[in-house]
Image (cartoon, rainbow, N blue to C red; front, side, top):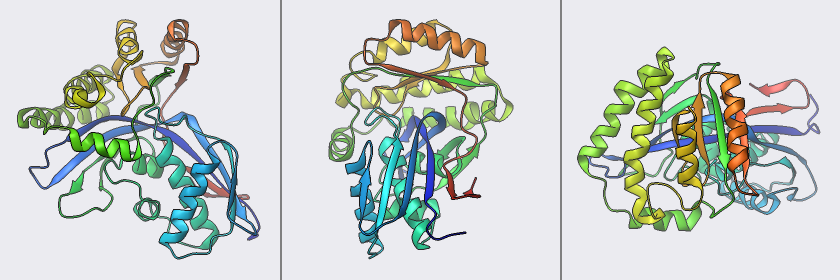
Length: 324
């Protein structure tokens, strides 16, 4: 295999289904659940070059992540990144984490650096609160991460990773509107949040452990969707003080209600939004639902329809593929 061959990384978007604990009474805070979807996705190509450079959509942000990764490893990185497509920014689909990890993974492949997910995340300063995007990048499927220790700042561990039944489909709608929080604004929002009621934190944990996860393992979409909807209802109240309600402002709340009325289960908002999702049991229903949503979405909005990603980021260097 030629060292001159470019490294290509294709990363799925991630849906963030909910935070588990804003209190941290047991020594860990946050934690979260989510899943990978194949559309929208990121496609990045990287090759050795005379200097560090980037081109294509989100090139400035990609270059900043590359500089951060190089500084972390004290590396004179000379790489040219070409972004062929990106995930919509600040929509609740994990665009920043997926881009950061893709840049880190490509650079690591070119320079022979460690490629385990936690190491990549540390190198680009991701995963400070949520590690859902890190683990969907690594493995796809449904993930549950265990939150941050109160005495450390490492990447939260992956506790559970389960495949999602191939027949389950997802409709994701991204209305045009106020971008979701990220970066310093997100950190400031978390700092303003009051502690979640202890009984509600316990309720979320109970739902996840004894309804949502068993339902997913058994392929029971109705029970999975019911648990996920209840988790969204509870955690939406936790974030209401900073986002103005249980859902992001604009079309998001209305879209959630329409998806539910039109037969989707497991309906909710991904992360800070404005993206929303609804899960159904087969492709025909999913395609019909996507068309109905397109019919009511204001101009500038986008609808995606797909199954779930059974693997994380695909990485290859020339041919054959480096990893699944």
